[in-house]
Length: 290
Picture 1 (cartoon, rainbow, N blue to C red):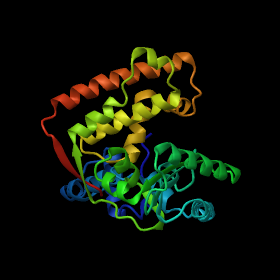
Picture 2 (picture 1 turned 180 degrees about the vertical axis):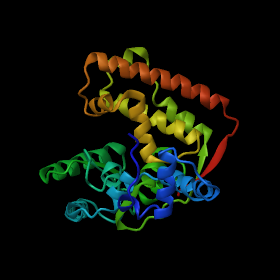
Picture 3 (picture 1 turned 45 degrees about the horizontal axis):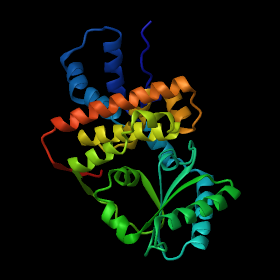
C-alpha cells in the first residue's frame, strides 16, 4: 500500500496544493499540465533544498540546553584562575556540534596575550595540571593553548585548526574567524607525512593515534575536494572504518584483530591520498568559510 502525505504533518514545509499533487503522483494518478508544473517548478526544487540541510545537526544547535551555561561558566572560571592574560576561550568539536547532547570530552582552545613558557614541555606540564583540576569538577577537557601571535599565524594555514574553528563557539573574548582560507598542497602533504610509520612502529601505536591519523587523512581528502565540513568528516570516518570501530579506537578499547584491520585501512588511505595529491594540478587554492 502506497503511503501518502498528510497536510497536517507537512503544512509548514509544503502547501496543501503541493501535497495534493505529490499524492496524485504517489498513487499513480494522471497529472494535468498544472500538476506537472507544480512538481517541476516548486516541489522538486524545494525537496532538493531540504535534502541538503542537516536538520538533526541544526536542531541540536538551536535547542536550548540548560547545562551548557553552567559548564561554560565553570570552564571560564577555572581557566581564568590558572592562566594569565587570556584573550579568548573557544570551544569546538562534538560539544558544539551537538549542543552538549552527545560528547565524550570538551575540546577547548585558549588564546593568551603572550606565552608563559620558554620550552614546550613547560606548556604541556601546565596543560596536564589544568586538566586534573577539571577532572575534579567531573569535566573531561582536551585543552590546547596558543599565544596570540602563533594563533593568528596558524589560523589561515594550519588545516586542523581550520576545521576546529569552522564549528566553534567563543565563550570568552573576541577572535576573528577567517572568512577565507588558503590551502597549499605542500601543507596537505606535510600533514599526510605525519601519519606514516615504519612497519615495526605500528605494533606500539595506540588505537587513538590510529583513529586520529585516519580522521586526519580523510580531512585532507575533503580539503582536496574543497570541502570544510565537520559533519561530513565525522560521517566519512565512520563510513571508512565503521562507527563501532571508530569509537573503540578513540577509547583505546580495540582488540588485536580490530587494530590490524584499522592499520590496513590507514595504510591504504595513505597510499590513495598520496596518489591523489600527486594528480592534482594546483599548488594552492582558496576556500571560503560559510
